[in-house]
Image (cartoon, rainbow, N blue to C red; front, side, top):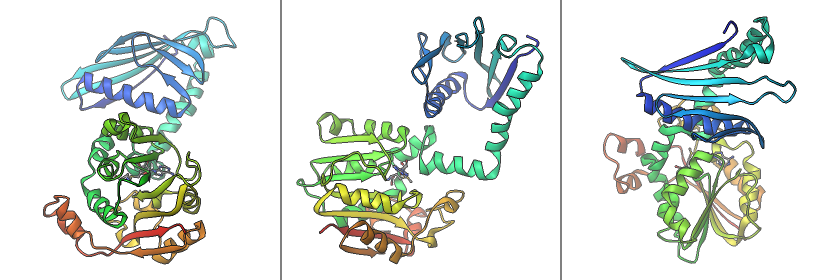
Length: 356
Ligand SMILES: C[S@@+](CC[C@H](N)C(=O)[O-])C[C@H]1O[C@@H](n2cnc3c(N)ncnc32)[C@H](O)[C@@H]1O
């Protein structure tokens, strides 16, 4: 007990809500670190493919305890991680305790403090500094969305519907089309497009969005009309010449290498394949369409740069339109004052390209 670790967070949720949310978030975050956590009473903790711990207690809304196996380099070094959910007047305290450090690091206390400073406190300080926090918020809400709030937004992204309708107008989809969507988010555009095309595929690099898009389009997936996978825009998991058309909306500004992504889209399109990308120019910086901290992490393109990218990727017929989205916003059922956000066409960019 002399050397032990305890850290906590207070949240305005019930213990059961806090439990479910934490389990959900941990499963995703551990996966990003190549660790797997099976969330159940018979669950295990894997590091890579190696089992490094087992779940001893699993009481939803109350506690989870994980017994770490002895470390491979030292016999007898088991330790225990306990996550407790304690109700209080304003919500729940989530307390994480790790017992058994004396066995793992020795009992001087200095080793534990060294580990605590470097592995727990420093990441906590660094991740609350403005640049890192801005990156986290950008990833969480738009660049690689995850979590309950983003799932709720992308299930039906009301303010993206005008863009969706503008794209559908230009694409004029038919049942003969085989559509690709790059960066499909929660799959709302796909759902609408599948009313016209018979087949579609989509990718997104956010596991949470792929899961949501899969749930939202389960019927088309079950009928073999749609496949959704986790992938990067600049490395599409499809053979050359697969699709008749491709779409990307709200994604371009986040791409680290847009030319590579355009080349990939060009590669997987069949001849005469159409490509439509919806983006916003720097006129939208700081508006509700591109608020901070996302705006300063987005790449805004000039129209001539978009055309140049498409031509360098191989497209021969290329143009950028600046349509007004107002009528599309009305059709999408938006009401005042939201409707006013779509007045005029300033900042709206619709890249339309075709493969020879
Ligand atoms: C702002 S959201 C737009 C989602 C959807 N297209 C819509 O309009 O509702 C951007 C999406 O692009 C995905 N994305 C961003 N960069 C990506 C990349 N390099 N490869 C694949 N997906 C990417 C994100 O994970 C996110 O789902």
